[in-house]
Image 1 (cartoon, rainbow, N blue to C red):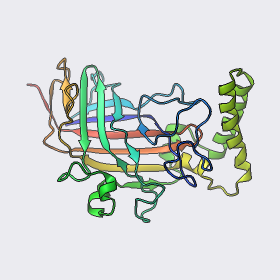
Image 2 (tube, rainbow, N blue to C red; image 1 turned 90 degrees about the horizontal axis):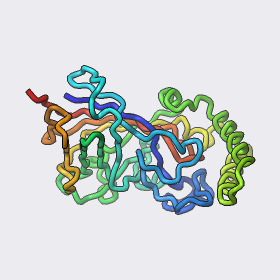
Image 3 (cartoon, helix red, strand yellow; image 1 turned 135 degrees about the horizontal axis):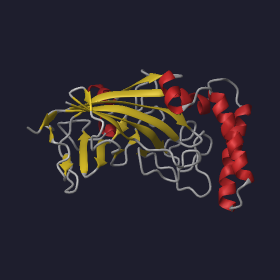
Length: 293
């Protein structure tokens, strides 16, 4: 058995309440574009970020941080540092809580779900089908069928300690206040007109915190929200000659990964920062593995 642990920052540029979920710019909600940025696209990116904002401009994406085989940590495994991606333009499909049941709350199913791990000439890639009998179906085709959708559901933790310790978002109000100070400092040293306009818009949004009443302001409480998912990836090979289920050009894995069996995965996403539209992602993938004799 091979176990891969991975973590890092993810990006999802999407509008949220009270904006429509497909709003391309963000008008009245806490997420919005600024001058110089393309429209919002709702795509969940674990790497290859689009116009990342300070302070996430150099933040690491999701990579493999540890590898264990039969419970024994491998300190020099070729998959260490491999990039983890969700390919196929995955999105949260709750449509501002329209396409999910009212209870349990804060369900954020991801579809499509196609995991890809690449590094050192190794590619591990597998798609999960929402309906294995009809692989062409998407979440929107079956969202009323709880027997099919429940496996993509998530558990929610509010004001999560785990998220705080990974992101450093310990005191949510202070995170916003310090961001405001940093943005004002950047504005003072910026001469490029488009960059100045972008910084001014972000500053104005954070300054508006004082006009909103209550501690449960979305801009701060998203910083502590944690959504945990658990399922077994069930799909067959992706039709791609350069990266099917498992490619190991240099035979570095020293063994065989099984794909007739499902691959259990547990992961969480949390600490979403509406100012940068970044959050944190961490998870574990378990692979059937038979070492070379």
